Image (cartoon, rainbow, N blue to C red; front, side):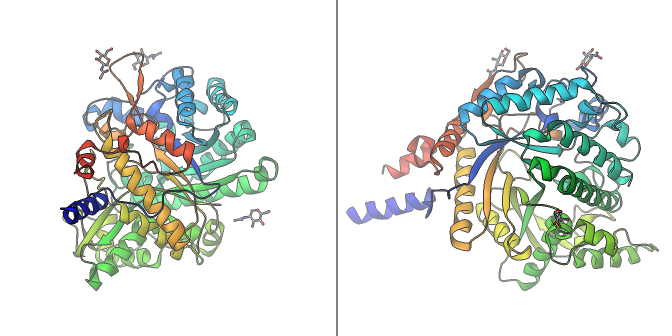
Length: 505
Ligand SMILES: *[C@@H]1O[C@H](CO)[C@@H](O)[C@H](O)[C@H]1NC(C)=O
Ligand SMILES: *[C@@H]1O[C@H](CO)[C@@H](O)[C@H](O)[C@H]1NC(C)=O
Ligand SMILES: *[C@@H]1O[C@H](CO)[C@@H](O)[C@H](O)[C@H]1NC(C)=O
């Protein structure tokens, strides 16, 4: 009898993922993130102009899963004080927010600065300062002014100048209160999803072409803004500046299959390395395998000039080393099953250029098709970043899980528990230098083409109520305890009752 009780008890502990480590190192910081277009609303007030998401949702509403848009969203433009109250309740060290370019510069250019845009962000930054919450500010989180998209958006090299002018204004107006900047949020999603596909606005779908025009421009724009900050603002403002790169981490479906292992590495170079290699690698420039594969495909397509070419020596040097910290957004892992053209790949396309077949048949479920729950993939990604990029300081700038908005969100808590545990494993066992963690997201918000159908918030937001009331989910209390104790909560109340019963057997 005792024997069986022990066995069942051990099984239950394994089920719950008994962790080796629970305590975060001294100085590790915790925060939550949002993005301007996903929460602010007020899309057409006080001088703000139309951005690419306003345009997409208004002219092609069928492209949004539930037909919603960002017109009001969480109404944070009017309710930012409520946002700050929630941050105070959670006890976070910092708040990651983004600035709306179209609210600050309605034409996209610096010929007209909208006073209300400056006023709004000053009010928000001052409200955060009153509560000792550090702002971590993203300059570009996808809401490009439509006026600049009309000129080609990120496929237009002149965007390097427009982005630099916008960043210069933001550093000047807000930089006295900001110690950490992010230039771009998720360059892969900007270039591949919005220019090489139609998964994100402006949904240009120039697959295999627009995506690479975008990456040339975006990496140069990032580098110029880094140098502007480094040379002109850092000496007086003393902050740091980084880029946040998203990974879908690829692993071989069969780890014993050498060909799959090699293809997974190629896929990771195409996904993460596309933007990380030019900035964080010792030699700089796009990964050699990308240049090779695209050149081979382009030749087969009869092109005179490959769709992606290596930067020249000037730009390789100008871009290399332009991020103080490696910002990582991470959600999920997908698998590689073998060589060939993925059945869902368009032609030409980034996916076809990889030359591998992928699958999402791995791990646990979330409310998002693409978001498979594979905590060990996070550890593998972090170890890979340490070895590929010479042990950079790493900041987790997003991590989180979607559901349909449940208040007792055990699946989200388990996701946080398991992913945070993997961070501790790589910090203590592999010496990966992870400095901080950002949960996506403070509250349910406009989740791009998924609208409000996939919810990532620590707070539930009722979007049919004009007051947009926010209600703390169980995960808000979990995160509050994490921030207070710097230790992954082990309390039974945070565990799914179905699993709890097993431990009581
Ligand atoms: C702003 O947009 C709303 C729809 O979200 C519309 O009802 C309202 O008339 C617009 N206001 C102005 C000033 O155009
Ligand atoms: C940043 O500025 C410092 C001081 O001028 C300089 O030494 C350093 O090389 C710059 N960083 C980069 C990546 O250019
Ligand atoms: C959301 O708000 C609407 C309007 O006030 C209300 O009828 C509904 O019950 C609320 N839903 C939830 C889940 O609170």
